[in-house]
Length: 364
Image (tube, rainbow, N blue to C red; front, side, top):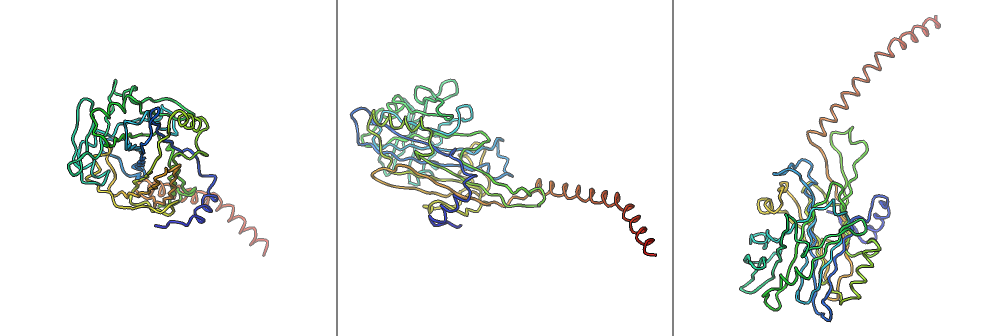
């Protein structure tokens, strides 16, 4: 794995400026209740590049990449609402609540990397995580209405050709019901996107059909709260919400991406915090379609007690693409060229022969 210096990285960005896009810009901001202050938040962003393995068919079909956003609130009783902006229209996004997965203690321990126990609660529904006999955090479980997440708890609306999600005061009040003072609350949502991925750009060589295997380049471009790449309306909404109530500082932003092990990480905008091979049997149940055998996890994060204003992660991947279909296409094209060559040779052979005879006669 090669990680460029900041200067090398900036030079590389300029060289591929025509490929880059601001589609990967996400915004998350939390607002205190009127007159309240003192809460901090952490944002956990996980991008699963499940569809990066073109040979993987999945256990239920429909293999799709997805993004998960987790919001950790240190003092949830002080929070009025949490807003999330995603760079795709409502019609192209499917939203799922991740809270039910945390009822399995191994999932909770794997995500937080802590020795935890897990208890499901009713009235209102949530998952309580315990560490060393004390409350670690409470995970809110969104209510459903006609198969969709209850709009009283999660408002979804169009905004600037994207989607604005709002975790409402109603949802926050529910997760705070009988909450132990000082216990954090956690919300985690999963978003599936359509085939036009907002965070991934793929570059394939133009001569790929003439090769039995080729190198494909992918760019994972994720940006959080980066004002210059967010729509003006979203940036204005963030400022307006900040004027109406005390903004909540983001003391940690963590970005994790899971990619097929065959993909080489050749460039990163920042040094990874850690990386590891994903345990297939363990995480295969966490994803409805399952995951390919062999996936690597790369983890970046930024901490600042004064607040992280924005965060970006740019990752360049290179994957050797080959397989039965690619080889079959190559052989068909090679065969077609062979046939065309033979036909062309047969067509011009009489003409060449006559030319040679004419030249020989002229020489005599």
